[in-house]
Length: 400
Image (cartoon, rainbow, N blue to C red; front, side):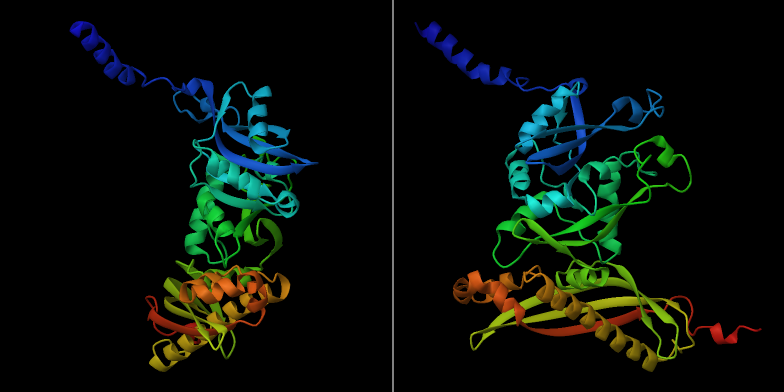
């Protein structure tokens, strides 16, 4: 009896150890999806999957004869029904764990809203939430994912890397991941903002190797502006300067380039080395007040006028002009959003909530009305630390 009991217990202990391969998935049975496109198809959702062609990206197989990716499409009432329906045309099961970008068509974002798609992907355990979300501007997500790009063989990888680099060195763009997007939609006192992507040039052969067979690609993908959402629906776009102002307010600017006009003509180019923004809120006599404090460290990149860069008085003057320019960018962005969109994309409501939760709970439903006349104070400090390898410009010394 004891031996039987010992045998049963031994089997019970060993069985869990023998189930390690129960959910195995062989690579040669999977289609690795890097780019996911979402468009409107009548009353249904159209899904576009950009899938890697293994033979074309493998150096051992002598790839390069065909395109490095292929595209599958399907339409259904819900996202995952459409994903499953892709198997009607794909010989492999679509594997979603390596999604790099999700591109949402502008029409879909405006009419259907992005909640259902975001919720479905966040709920799916195989999908990692670190993919970047973009909005296809003036086109569809399917067309964006159809463009072959030079330098990066995989277009979805190009979109991911391009946006990642751009957000670090060019202030009008920013990155939003899947989990950040969900947080923006459910958090009080802030509305989502997503970078747009558009197709530049003719699209007739953008999906063939003709698009990357010349030095200058006929069609290319370009990050362009920030899209503004109210809850989960797209309501408009910010201009380049408004996008810069938004990113300075949100502390998204890491490094960028800009210029100021000289007082006697010409321009001075500045490179932002680092920039830090701090936002605070307080409630004074029942009225919220926002304080924005920026510390910006810059260097001079180019001087196209005859100012004396070696003079400390000139440096101080340039610092004051830069401070005024940053304040103008932020004010322009806030006023434009107040006038055109009437939503809080800057997170001012969050700051008020952190400062006085009781007050914010009272005004939360009417917060957009408070935004219209919100009192915002600016404190900008610009320090020019470097002037390059030259002191004064030699423009006036050029001989005729």
